[in-house]
Image 1 (tube, each protein chain N blue to C red):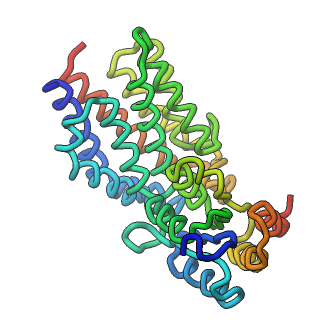
Image 2 (tube, rainbow over the protein chains, first blue to last red; image 1 turned 30 degrees about the vertical axis):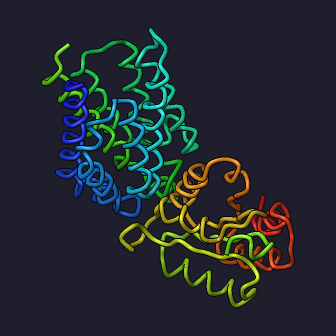
Amino acid sequence: MQINRALILGLIETCHEVIASHADDLCELDRAIGDGDHGTNMRRGCDAVYLDRERLGALPLPQALETIGTMLVMSVGGASGPLYGTLLIEIGRRLGARQNGADFANIVGEAIEAVAKRGRAQAGDKTLLDVLYPVHSEMVRQSALVHIAERAQQSAQLTAGMKAMRGRASFLGDRSIGHIDPGASSCALLTTAICRYLKEYHPA
Amino acid sequence: MKGKIANVGIVIVSHSPLVAKGTADMVRQMVGDGVPLSWCGGNAEGGLGTNAAGILAAIEAAWSDHGVAVFVDLGGAETNSEMAIEMLGEPRSSLVAICNAPLVEGAVIAAAEASGGAPLAKVVATAEELSPL
């Protein structure tokens, strides 16, 4: 139970810190092709979770993830609130109902499909899915954490070449090309921070 | 408001509090107290944006057992409204519909339809006639 608590608190603090320190950059990316509030929105959500971390740390991991997902839905706003919220809610639910032997990568894969359904988006649409899908494929391959993080960052960079098909950026058509997607960027930042945390504090 | 009016409720969701309130004012001018009506505009801090908790509260405020039609402006308003509707839980979730219609025109024409006692499906269909296929 102590390990559970340490893991949850560590992940909350790590995610809170990386979003707080990059909120302005995320807003900057969003100003180029959207409404400029992605960093502010993500920070609001992470602040809400961070403030409640002691209560969350006392929950079993599946319930903690589901509760955090709901908090993000309620506090982030924009499309990213429901998208990140759905990801965590679905991972939490599936983890809670997990049968012996069910693979964590499979659980994440199913949760990513729920995110795609929620956003009615697919790979190549210039969204956070363009980071989540490659991250998932590295997980399936059981890649090292450092490789998962690298793949996340490369994948976010690759969204610059894509034309936005969903969200506010899609209104710009071809003019969205050349800019990194803010949602893909926050997703890569979070993935990298989580991988680094897991590597340092929970060596495999 | 619950149960007092036997008409479909109308909820207006915009990224802007001013747009949401202004649209609600136009609906009110058209139908008076004839339909349960509520709006949610902006993020949790009152700035431009969307807010699932606020949308959920607006749906509760305009609740009708005959159903609620929700009007949204841009993508985030739709995604957050879908999330709020799911959070209502069944059987109430099935009684709420997001209309594919322009915000102002859709809400006003839907409210006019609802004020005559039309069922949810008719209210939604009337509003959606405004959108090209």
